[in-house]
Length: 517
Image (cartoon, rainbow, N blue to C red):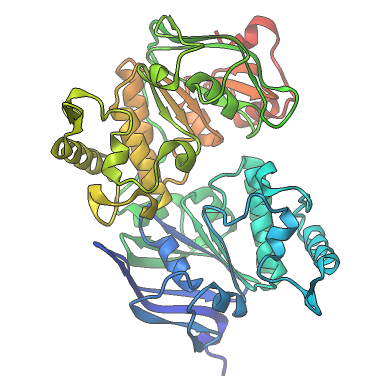
């Protein structure tokens, strides 16, 4: 008689993994059936990525065993995992930027003949996989020149090239556009339908409900439970995940905007990769007491617009006026005197990863009187300030203020940046993808903080790819397409379908309508 056990391709039994100051996984058991999409859900820092890193051989557990097809296995490193047919797409991609797409895919699994690399055969295999699963990529492009969505396809093709049958996706949709997310979920479902087994780490309840067969929930390193997706709903999952009821909708009063804080007139920013301008003659205002959202499909000039406003890129035309002062030629530090910036790329522009959490918390403020004395850092004041922000924003880390930023989960890195920037209390808050990689509880809190900042008289410029966030948080929506603002919409008078038409360039307002004024 067939036992239930034989249905499980992977069993992680009583796994415990500890780091300095924290038990990341505390006696966790996870069972993955053959041919299923199994979601792993939990708050930032709940231990999801750690558990998957144990399965992939990046970490060794203090306690517990792993079984494959009922047999105990020892996974000492990723090579052992690959030999067992386990592959992983990491939250922050593991690609060599100066290598081509093809070289990245075959790296470490090269086919050789008498010591010579057989690239032609490798190319044929990759092209066949690309065609079969609809994962179109330019095999000769360098990774540094392709989009984030394309980089993810490269990571998936790396797994398929190695004939992996157990596929781990760690926050795979955090950096994708809505269209790319839909494509990825379809691909994941296709993998499961042909017998591959998927472990899918996500915070996004919509995606889990759409694609997963079962969901395992972790909270603060502990196993909470496993449920069939068809027998649950988003509210129940969010309660399991956070341990309390979560408000999934943004609650806010009508905006009461006053004077203009940010005035942008005909701003033009050149493109680093194309001959045409990335931002082409954009004009708009953001007033105190309102949230204005820049919406659009990724790659339509939103990033360059933010770079032009913050001074990270030089503009080639137009003016930027902040609090009545022309800052078009001001330095980044001068602009920061009246502007908080939650950046798109938390590693590149948000944190110094090898600094401690407390050092990162005062990056823009260490020269202020309360944090220094005769040119020397006032360490107790910095520690006290950092501890307060960690407590207020629930930033989870193994060693509190002295934790190295690099060792924290992506979501907690994001919370640290948001805590620092909102606490600076500047007239303009520029929030770019502020909830990227955050769980529902953290999203609820951050949305509340942005609304509170608006109600306190701050001007908020939000840049988001999350359509739900755009529709629920904005007071006005400006849609960017190919470097221009093609429409200004009232979220109360539009819907996702109309917004999508503007984002795709199929619809456009003309003249004064699209000025954003």
